[in-house]
Image 1 (cartoon, rainbow, N blue to C red):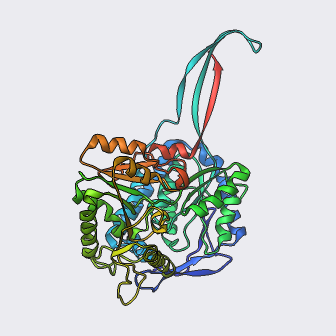
Image 2 (cartoon, rainbow, N blue to C red):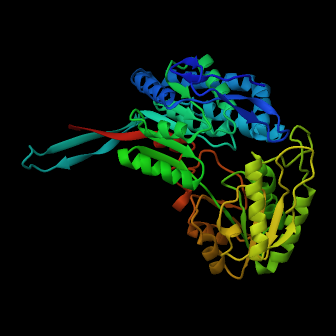
Length: 483
């Protein structure tokens, strides 16, 4: 689809110093295109270009910045089929998912941040008594949100459209400039996003994209002295390393890291709704999503029925070529990741879990496929219950009462999104408030895209989405004066 992609640095398309590397379609194992391998010097040049562009862009009227984002949304929408085809090829997502949840969501996010919101608020006046610093009087104050500066955006492979858009759009809306380092598995879509922004009129240096398969590319983009903030989506282990680098220079951080979402299902739950929600782990991005309800805590009264219904649900899902209309489960991102997911299933067997369905590699002519897999008879101490697998694998753990269900849900290093299913809404909300997670779905896996998103514990630092993203990509300044 794409020949040899150049880098995007300082408003110019630049040939990479390190040549190119192959991007592979995880469904066909054929070459999608050739991504650029930036050198450390080119990454630092991108950061310097963003620094130079920051002053003028930050002083641009919010309405002008919003107009650029709105035009970008229109361009992305107008090229939806072209962009979705590339996204499908790079990620292995079904075409419907690539259209709606990848490119479609990206356009919606640019459109959302094309809305201008207030960036300053009056603070209640304070009456001061006379003191050594001056006379008694009234002090007025104003709280102002200022852009952070240059933001390095390190994005995830599972959604090369919605994830970068969720960083770039609010960062630009607040007056920041960005250096985007896409995941090495599927960077070509992010370059198409840069083309759309260039066509929308983003000034040179405001958006830069540098990719590479070597760790030095990301390391340089994080460590550059020109960078004021790092926004990262990915594994907890990588996030911890980035946090250490940011900590040395007190750089601002926004981290969306791993998850091991608990789905607490009570005896009185609507099992059809619970099965459909939990079943998204099997189907949505083939389980390659940090918000998936992969850890099912089933009250004993419905445990066996829930396991049976989840198994039946998994067996009905067609695994195969994501270009075919009736395919529900496409491949995982790579052969290496398929091996990793399969190793966890085998580990579950060794730990004593029962493989109710799945567990065997689908017989297909090509591609990196994993069958939807359900593990039952699990204990909370098993690694398949405690560690993020990032594939279409669900582990079920039984519990007796509300207190035990809450304790099991909270017995994890993660805390991104948990879920509660119960016919007793009062109990569901009571339990939700006791779960140590950044978000809780009550009888749903749906999201409100204005609600804050982020994690507790090792699932991340900070909150974004909606207006919360504008807060994340800004600093608060106080301006005080005598009244």
